[in-house]
Image 1 (spheres, one colour):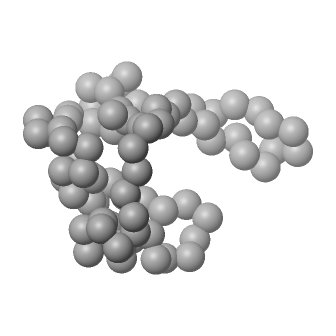
Image 2 (cartoon, one colour):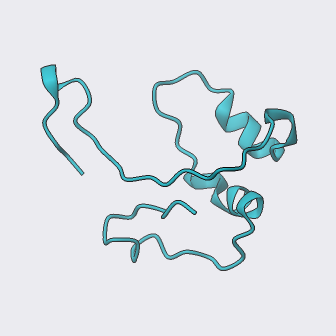
Image 3 (tube, helix red, strand yellow):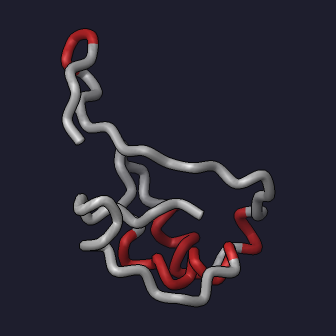
Length: 76
């Protein structure tokens, strides 16, 4: 979703939900660690959604075209 921000610095917005529990970096699947080790402003984790779902206990695949019609992967 696009929204105007002061100075136009962060106009791309996405709704997220946080989980109370967390995982140590060393406990993350290797493919997730590799994605997170890239030093960019935005990290695309869509290629490792299955690994992330495994951490949250989600077992059913999510159709990204259904999540609000935006292609967003709903946060657990």
